View 1 (tube, rainbow, N blue to C red):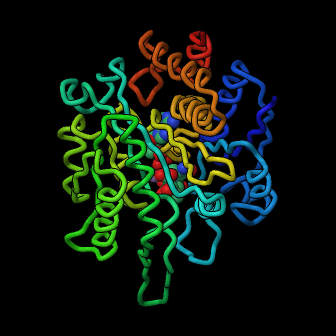
View 2: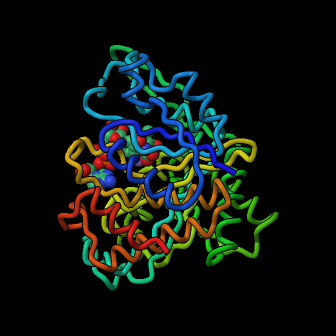
View 3: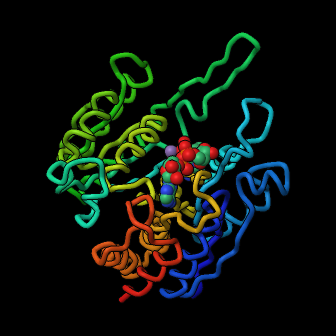
Length: 346
Ligand code: NAD
Ligand code: IPM
Ligand code: MN
């Protein structure tokens, strides 16, 4: 049976890291890829970042594989102008993908690529569970000549369901959840904390739960990353903390993600990084976060565990053999990274 994958290459380095990823997937199984304009590319072609056709194609697929959107061409402070990022937020919301899983497990071969010391990194294996369809990203926005506002809003049901995803994930890992909030200041955070504790008490008391304020969490992630197993947090905090956590693995170009939560539709799989306009078009982007996102798609979206592990093992092997793109301190090109990983596929 062929798996139908909606592919959204997007902007900047997006197309450059998409093409090798599809080549890699073709080594592993029978996939039907359909590519669709998205983000800035879609604004240029159709005036909007997410067309009805692209959304319908995503809905009809088994999984959606996305590279990255955005870039200086579409950067604007005009609230009425279309933005590439609106396409991404719209897609997550329309597909009902409220849970974003961002695993961070630095491989020993890359310890020296990180700004942190080897002994700080050793043993780090954490999962950021980021709430993805609520909070300040989706609240009402206002703008006048003299002021502007973004509303942060969460319902109890939204917090309840993301808490369950985090506790379930912890049960399959090391049974520890840090719930990260700003409950010393924000009302949404105080309710978040209360709901997380209620869910914990009712159904997950076998899992250890710790509360952590987001500012000190940012510090602890860098100082003592091995203390974390699962971190569950709201949309904006999760966005920021996961980029910080990416540096534990040596580069933002290493971190994959899976957006899930709707059992009746496809998941969305994408790197944590953006369109890297500063290096776009040079053929030097690190495709590994995209390869690893494809692995997450195989595992979480298509139930192809063996194939998912094959990609992850090949990436680890290639890195152990010395593969280093520019962001990791080397000079391997995107094409050489594909060759190195493809050559290690079992
Ligand atoms: P970015 O993640 O694109 O880049 C940050 C830095 O990391 C840059 O120096 C870049 O060269 C480097 N980098 C990122 N990915 C890399 C890779 N695979 N290989 C090598 N180096 C890599 O963040 P930014 O520059 O702040 O944002 C650029 C654009 O991307 C913005 O328009 C932003 O909105 C968008 N963005 C999109 C997504 C997404 O589509 N999921 C995520 C984040 C940012
Ligand atoms: C991410 C990105 C997006 C986000 C942007 C591009 C809308 O930074 O996926 O982390 O903030 O969610
Ligand atoms: Mn981000």
